[in-house]
Length: 469
Image (cartoon, rainbow, N blue to C red; front, side, top):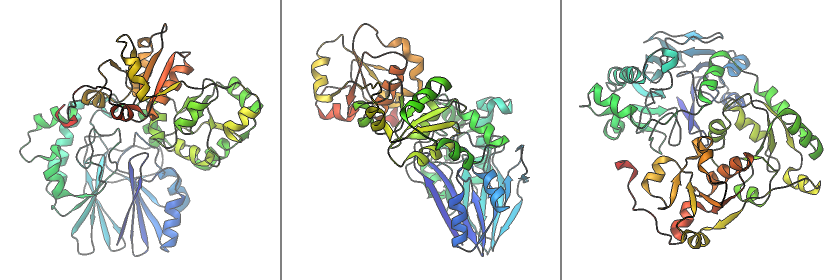
């Protein structure tokens, strides 16, 4: 028996490869399927099943392409109604994989079709659960994503989730291993642990939602409390996972069209494409194409693209580091952004050498901010998450989270310079690029963000542990 977790940090997503006696099951595969096929070939094994825990909202699964290329059967739990050929399992149904057995545990609540897969060894002993978004480490799946499609309230879905956990998962033995679909950083839960594998016994001790004396009413209240609005691209990803999508090879073929500066500029003007700059924030600050949007590859790239650009049909033109064109297009496709129509050949240096118009971003180090803050009229905006802001911030700062930056455009003054900061500099440069693309240029980024501000000795509010908020 071989179980391998294939974890993608930028999505905080775990896919799983299970092999026994030459037969393989893949659980919740990513869009690009070649790694799974190569892995099975290395084991001289055949991919037999593709198990989907639910219709994912935060990424596009590779289930359809993988089934097409391998002949494997796509399996969903009860209530799933995909537009493509798949086996819709019944609750309790079992599938043989080599000398292993995979049992379907229907666990609705996150979505109506949400299913946990229980792995049994050759002797029939329960070994592991692949819990999808039903059970995370330290948390459970949010119950508000499927309420419209299911014609239920989030409270009704939370009640179903309570029953699923108590009736299907918590009765399992403490030594059963929990393999969730996501870890810390995913928008599918509120406060997940940084670990990606744990025992069910430890989760019964550590996870607030598995308290043995917890009433359903308490569960509903705690699980629904503090839920932020889901990113706007989530329902579009659900639609793609449910109805199908274009082969990633076609997406790559279209997106990897190399464009010289004149052609790049013309296409940007004619197509209404967004110019997406994925270099580092330091490079973007020094110089960039006017009105381009910065979302750097080295941060939480794909989730921020999904949250801020939102429309997966939006055409994109790329400015990338050398050699990172294919990687960028692949990572965009993971969250359904398939309409990349080309990239700037030679990157930003080619643009400069061609004598094209360039822009830059004003930035100051944190130690120079102290002088500016001596003027109590100085406007400074904190673009971190609300929980980060509530924990600690500059006294003069105005809370404007990056995830909702477009809703705060009227908050920024047009008659004086203002300042932006985040935790380390990544998100504030994203925010600045969006504001500049909207014609707001009277801004200054604080280099190094709140971390540098703290080191500089600038006074902040008293720290409040996020767990007490």
